[in-house]
Each structure stands twice: as structure tokens, then as C-alpha cells.
Length: 218
Image 1 (tube, rainbow, N blue to C red):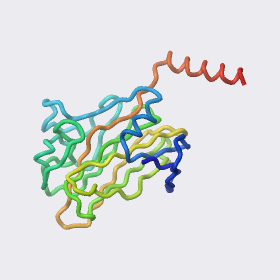
Image 2 (cartoon, rainbow, N blue to C red):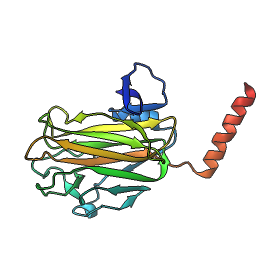
Image 3 (spheres, rainbow, N blue to C red):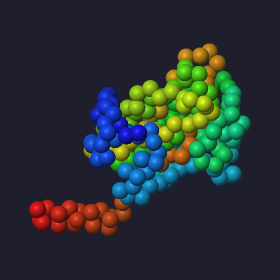
């Protein structure tokens, strides 16, 4: 699904073209529309990553932070319940397997702002009381767009993709805010973080030249 959004608002539009900001819950549509340039993708499938704390680590220009440790765990083991990785068998879990950790928030900060970014949010149970909201920020700290409430998919364990393609301000950071209304916290993890690469200088020059030629022809 494509949602054409502005900060603090979302409207479903049945149209194939892009507006200023396009919010996605369908990864396949995101991959098509975001592929103006090539995409970088972070997964956590390497056996060497299992049990590692990635808090503060920068991967392909994306720095991962959280109120807690960011441990790579086996998704099938999960935390309280088994979870489903969207790629391979491992996911990123705030607090790891520790069931006492209540805050599963995540912040992704890019070294250089990107025009598109998204990730899979992995839930361990669908009880209607555990959900996340995802907000995309520009370099000034202004919220470009927010997802609103995203509950666990029906039939969890499962995962939900959340992404944005911005035709305006580039995305400097993503903040995922997890909320849970139950005493025994449902747990949330993350997988397959995808974002646009920064074009090489030669590519930028070619894009600029193409725009100049286009204007002259008009």
C-alpha cells in the first residue's frame, strides 16, 4: 500500500505517481519506487553476528541506537515467543532474550540523509495491545512523516514493513517508538533495514546534466 503523506497526516490515494512523501507498508512497492538509485540493505544473518551487541554501531552509513542493548538473536527462539525473521534466521532485538526489558524502541541515524528508507518490524504476538509508530526526520530534526499506529500483523509471529520515499527533504533519521499496554511486555525486533545509497559524484553530475538538457529542450 502507498500512502501519500505530510507530517502529521496520511491520506490513501489510488494513484501510481509519487507525491512529496510516499509512505509504504508494502516492501515490493517500496523497492520499485525507491530504486531511483541502488539500495543498501542491512540484515543480521551472518553467524558471526549472533549474540553481538550492535548498539552504536554504524553499518553502511546507518548508526543504530536504543535505550537498551541491541543484540542479534535467533528469531525462532524469540524472547517470550518465537518470532519470524524477514531475512534468514536472525533479527535485531533490543535487550536480546531478556524478558524484563520493556522498551524496544530503535533509532537509525544516517551519516548522510537519504531519499528513501524502510525496515521490517518483527512482532512476537498479535494481541492488539502491542504496536509501534515510526517517524522519519530530516537533518533539522523536523518530522517529515509519521506512520501512526502500526499493530502486530494478524497471525503473528510476523513482521510489518514500514518505509518512506521522500521527494522533498531527505531522511536523516528514523525513530521507532514501541508501546505496549500489557503487564507482560510483548517484544519487538527489527530486520532488513533498506535505504537509498548516496550517488557517486559522477552520477550526480550526469543527473544534473540530464536536467539541464531537459530544460533546454522545453
